[in-house]
Length: 129
Ligand SMILES: [Zn+2]
Image (cartoon, rainbow, N blue to C red; front, side, top):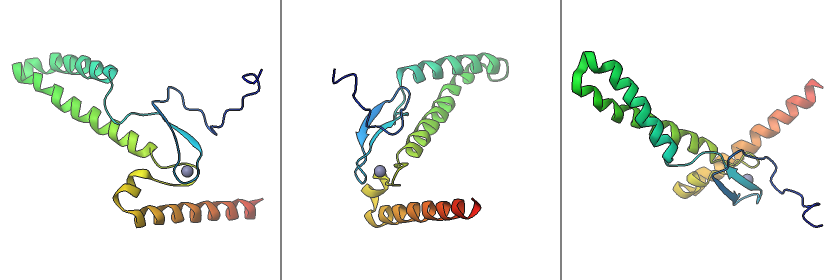
C-alpha cells in the first residue's frame, strides 16, 4: 500500500544513473549520469575503434598504426572526465563538491554567482511578461 503512494524525492530522473547521492548544500537527491572512469563497454569501444583505424592506417604506417589505440584511449578518457566534471555542480543550488574540496571560498563564490544569475534570469522573465 505504501509503495503505491511513494513519492520519488528526486526532482529529475536520470537514465542509467551511475551514482545516487544527496547534495551537501541543498539536500536534494541527485544522480550522476556519467562515471569518472571508463567502463568495460568503453574499453571494448576503444578496442573496436582503434582496430578499424589501424586497418585504415596500415597501408600508410604499417605496424605503427597499432599505436592509434593510445590516441583513441586518450580521447575517450578526456571526454569521460569532461562529462563527469560537467555533471558535478548541483543544478538546484550551484554547489560544486570538487571545487569545495579544492578551495572553499571559490565554491562559496560559485554558489553566490549561481544565485545571482538565477535572480537576474527571474527578473528578466518577469519584465518580459
Ligand atoms: Zn544542491
